[in-house]
Length: 102
Image 1 (cartoon, rainbow, N blue to C red):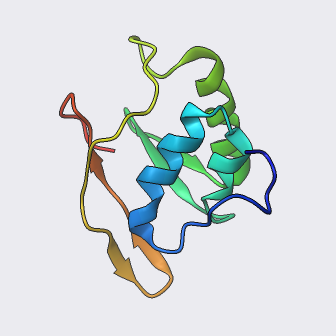
Image 2 (cartoon, rainbow, N blue to C red):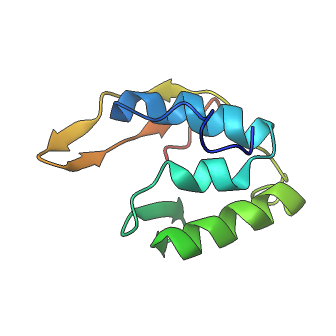
Protein backbone atom coordinates (compact mmCIF):
# COMPACT_ATOMS: atom_id res chain seq x y z
CA UNK A 1 0.00 0.00 0.00
CA UNK A 2 3.01 2.31 -0.21
CA UNK A 3 2.51 3.05 -3.91
CA UNK A 4 0.97 6.53 -4.16
CA UNK A 5 -0.69 5.64 -7.47
CA UNK A 6 -2.81 2.92 -5.86
CA UNK A 7 -3.94 4.80 -2.73
CA UNK A 8 -7.57 5.81 -2.68
CA UNK A 9 -7.80 9.60 -2.22
CA UNK A 10 -10.03 11.25 0.37
CA UNK A 11 -12.52 12.91 -1.97
CA UNK A 12 -14.84 13.89 0.86
CA UNK A 13 -14.04 14.78 4.51
CA UNK A 14 -16.26 11.87 5.56
CA UNK A 15 -13.70 9.52 3.92
CA UNK A 16 -11.00 10.55 6.38
CA UNK A 17 -11.75 8.19 9.29
CA UNK A 18 -12.13 5.09 7.12
CA UNK A 19 -8.95 5.77 5.15
CA UNK A 20 -6.91 6.84 8.18
CA UNK A 21 -7.82 3.76 10.23
CA UNK A 22 -7.19 1.41 7.29
CA UNK A 23 -3.78 2.95 6.59
CA UNK A 24 -2.79 2.97 10.27
CA UNK A 25 -3.72 -0.70 10.56
CA UNK A 26 -1.61 -1.41 7.45
CA UNK A 27 1.36 0.51 8.89
CA UNK A 28 1.21 3.04 6.04
CA UNK A 29 2.49 6.21 7.72
CA UNK A 30 3.13 7.95 4.40
CA UNK A 31 -0.42 7.16 3.29
CA UNK A 32 -1.82 8.47 6.58
CA UNK A 33 0.12 11.71 6.19
CA UNK A 34 -0.98 12.07 2.56
CA UNK A 35 -4.58 12.52 3.75
CA UNK A 36 -3.71 15.93 5.23
CA UNK A 37 -3.10 19.29 3.57
CA UNK A 38 0.38 20.85 3.98
CA UNK A 39 -0.89 23.35 6.57
CA UNK A 40 -3.32 21.01 8.39
CA UNK A 41 -3.76 21.24 12.16
CA UNK A 42 -4.57 18.12 14.20
CA UNK A 43 -5.70 18.27 17.85
CA UNK A 44 -4.26 15.19 19.59
CA UNK A 45 -5.67 16.09 22.99
CA UNK A 46 -4.23 17.54 26.14
CA UNK A 47 -3.93 20.96 24.52
CA UNK A 48 -1.43 19.63 21.96
CA UNK A 49 -1.81 20.56 18.30
CA UNK A 50 0.17 19.18 15.38
CA UNK A 51 0.77 21.85 12.75
CA UNK A 52 1.80 20.90 9.22
CA UNK A 53 2.55 17.64 7.45
CA UNK A 54 6.02 17.22 8.96
CA UNK A 55 4.64 17.26 12.53
CA UNK A 56 1.73 15.00 11.55
CA UNK A 57 4.10 12.53 9.86
CA UNK A 58 6.40 12.48 12.90
CA UNK A 59 3.43 11.79 15.20
CA UNK A 60 2.12 8.96 12.99
CA UNK A 61 5.62 7.45 12.78
CA UNK A 62 5.88 7.37 16.58
CA UNK A 63 2.33 6.03 16.81
CA UNK A 64 3.26 3.04 14.64
CA UNK A 65 6.11 2.18 16.99
CA UNK A 66 4.59 2.90 20.40
CA UNK A 67 0.81 3.17 20.10
CA UNK A 68 -1.06 6.18 21.45
CA UNK A 69 -1.55 7.13 25.08
CA UNK A 70 -0.84 5.10 28.21
CA UNK A 71 -2.90 2.18 26.92
CA UNK A 72 -0.76 2.03 23.73
CA UNK A 73 -3.88 1.89 21.58
CA UNK A 74 -4.06 2.02 17.81
CA UNK A 75 -6.78 3.74 15.80
CA UNK A 76 -10.20 2.17 15.66
CA UNK A 77 -13.50 3.13 14.09
CA UNK A 78 -15.82 5.31 16.11
CA UNK A 79 -18.87 7.44 15.44
CA UNK A 80 -17.83 9.99 12.84
CA UNK A 81 -19.81 13.21 13.02
CA UNK A 82 -20.74 15.13 9.85
CA UNK A 83 -17.86 17.39 8.82
CA UNK A 84 -18.29 21.14 9.14
CA UNK A 85 -17.27 22.58 5.79
CA UNK A 86 -16.56 26.20 4.86
CA UNK A 87 -14.99 26.65 1.43
CA UNK A 88 -11.80 24.57 1.31
CA UNK A 89 -11.75 24.05 5.08
CA UNK A 90 -13.28 21.01 6.78
CA UNK A 91 -13.48 20.24 10.50
CA UNK A 92 -13.88 16.53 11.19
CA UNK A 93 -14.67 14.83 14.49
CA UNK A 94 -15.08 11.25 15.68
CA UNK A 95 -16.29 9.95 19.03
CA UNK A 96 -14.23 6.91 19.97
CA UNK A 97 -15.67 3.81 21.61
CA UNK A 98 -14.21 4.95 24.93
CA UNK A 99 -16.12 8.25 24.66
CA UNK A 100 -13.21 10.51 23.79
CA UNK A 101 -13.59 12.86 20.83
CA UNK A 102 -10.96 13.48 18.18
